[in-house]
Image 1 (cartoon, rainbow over the protein chains, first blue to last red):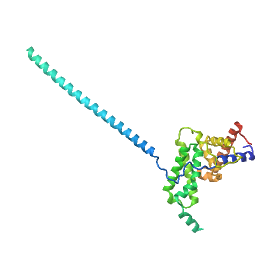
Image 2: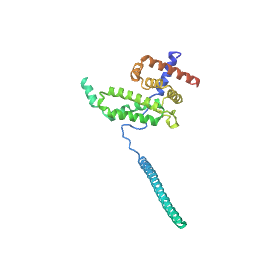
Image 3: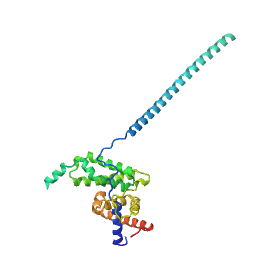
Image 4: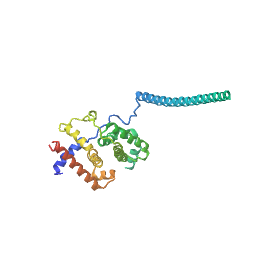
Length: 92
Length: 173
């Protein structure tokens, strides 16, 4: 702040530079959501739902596979036991 | 006088208030944030609050003061929430409202950018002083700070701006 004249010049420029501006749209008019945004929101929801159900289905398939594997192991173990018993009987 | 005030009070309609004050609310946010979409969001938020609080607004003068204060608070909040630096695109350079042969748009744009780079309190003080043409005492009330602090912010901000302008060869003409 060197002097009042310089202050006045800068202040006048600031007043011009910072003059009020009208906004790009009238806020008194309610803005409708553009149709493409509604479609985009619906598509995004569909993607999320599909991804969610996809994950659920994969988890279900995993549980099924585990159950089938357990069953197969049980059958194999039962068969092995039976063969072992028969072998023991033959060897007597 | 009382009758006039009563008429004014009953005549407070939301759309009228929005149309009257939208340039003020939007410009406080825009000059403070230098981000047009964010300034629009802030302005929308301010008018949404006005709609909710319309019953508590007693007069047009009260509405002006209320909107100015809320616009200032919301702009500061938005600026604090925003961590990234303000991005300035070519589309954000404002169209001049009217032609003024004495006005240098390049200087105006440089000044707006420089104001946007000031520290938060100095920036809002400068905006209220030169956009809203408020007195330091009014600024002190709206920003809830002592008058001496407001004067100090203005003094420092003007010093910084002049220094930057001179460094760029855009000093006094």
